[in-house]
Length: 420
Image 1 (cartoon, rainbow, N blue to C red):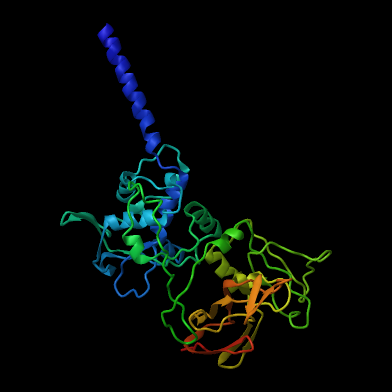
Image 2 (image 1 turned 90 degrees about the vertical axis):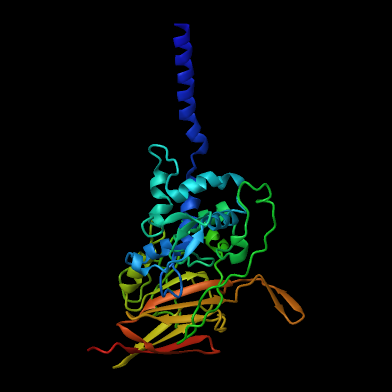
């Protein structure tokens, strides 16, 4: 009996340990978020003929059709590269946020342990959900573990990502820029290396593409996190139009700035009245596009273009029409005219997207040998912005010409789409 009792006790202890052990290695919500976000944002399928690679999450946000094995480029990437890039991105984060390499390997294989009822596990699925194994085979070749048809995107597009997710990523990683040094990321150490979080790594200059008017050269762009962090709790709105001769007929613009209304100001439904539209959370890219498309002259302003208080406002516009073309004029005071930092794109459906950098609103201005501390900062603050609006009808983007003059006015003319 004593032997049986001892055996039962030993079995009970073993069972107790087996129940407790997984909790020590179960990734928490932040770790799951980072795994999903990093591999979904910085990696994408390697497809034939694709000039600019899109991440998995970007493809999902754009509703792109699924790709097949015939679309794949047939490339290979060592799994150790995925591991190095993951730890490089988390090099400034708290050590507890980076999972051990054994758990990372389980995540890549789709075997990451999941506690019952864990909502974060369903919200942030594992690697095979992002890269299906039938298309992205994981195999051993020449004593190396490799994965097929996957590409590292060191300077990913982030326009589709919700503000709260960008803010969370910035807080957890400590990064101020989404752009990574390609070589440094590929050569980074693993989490088991004691020096991984103390080593000094010089961040490379971010790079990407922005196209100038009527052309598409490869130029540089920056993706900063801090501006988003400062505004993460602010909602999208349609602000009241400033009452002036220049703006009385202008439509309200879409921003994500906190609302400011004059006292006793109310919307009565009249043509010249201002209006405000509140959302419980920032709208998705698709929702924003639908809102802009529902108006004939509405505009969506994001970034610094939406932060001006008084004085010249970035984004004021006029739209004209003739028998075979549309013309638009957009006020862009204080915006750099350098083609490497400014672009205007027109799409088939008449959507116009302007990206650029404002240079006004600094706290300190240096002119020659003098330094000025600004007593007021009413112009748009310096930084990146984007403006989008919808022309009344479909157009032919190949027949678009634009001119950004020294007066700060962008003027564009695009031919209407020919009806066949």
